[in-house]
Length: 503
Image: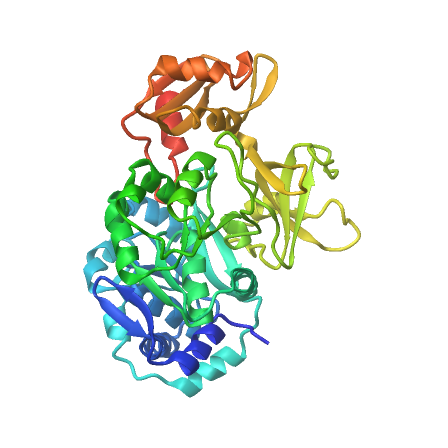
């Protein structure tokens, strides 16, 4: 029985020891080299008294050394917490106040940043840890005490109060997701993945764990490459990458900038996306460019280990339609609940709640917020059955598939009507020359505000929207922006736009 993500690493080391596991801009590591680095790092922490389930913040750029750091902490029985080394120190200090880590693991490149955050005695340089001789027997003893419900990592997400939340994910959650995804997608050692998401964002989880589970190869390119999609596509073609897990924003930008017309990437056989809505317009651009690829729309918040539902796209969609998020993944339960906590009928909009092994252990050091959204299943009150209230509104379509409608917090009351801003966005994205769109509600002006990126004229948008949505849903204010701002996770920064244009 698998009980630790390290089982994946060691199995692939035994079967594919000399094969390249991970490639970054500075070089590559085989499975034996990667596992060796992780064991040396783990031995260092074990000798320096890292308590089991103690938190170690990892502050370094994504790449093969970061992976050795993650699994080194895991070998020592700790919990790794990846951080954005480019984030403002003020925000990182808020995260440190929540996590209260035992150590900060970094490299020489980021040492000065680390010194702004913690005392010198808490800082560990990876370069020093890698000088330690691996004590394999001691690491085996530590691992023998671990169980599959122990935490493996913490991903920090933004909080509504301004205090970040640390989402705690167990080994079992990662194992179950990785097994499901690997079986459903028929991954093997022949897979060549290209990572897009930063490691401090949970969209990177399938890259890391589907790679080591299957003895595949992972290419990690610098984050700034995604500002130049043609460069990324050329790399995909050159390295014969055949599988990607990307956030829709990266796919959208690549399609909008016409990069798919410039570079042949028919080597891609499996294209998977998750994290936000994928507009059909840009999906169809990708489908035209890579017609033989399998496309999969995953859905899942950080609190449910990357993905809880998925839809293997198996039919044609018009640009003004919505891609379903499909059905529940294996060992996952989905509930669609109305405001009275009763199950919704097909077609009725309700809040999506998730139950099963993929559900997070809660928010680190935040029992109040944990109790607010990790709740007793109202449909099973007779025994403990925890589910996560996602805040996402969905419905079942006529095929029995789940369709994403919008966020509860994007739902507004305007002119007596309850309106989903996502419905307006979906209509607007299908106007010619609109490349990206975000709708807000200005509380003081009682006005729907639409902000967009693209060459379309405001008057053309107004005219097109009149044919697509009721009059009461038409935006009162439409503004063209050169660029919609993106947050660290590669999504439209709605908070920033709200502060600037919605109040």
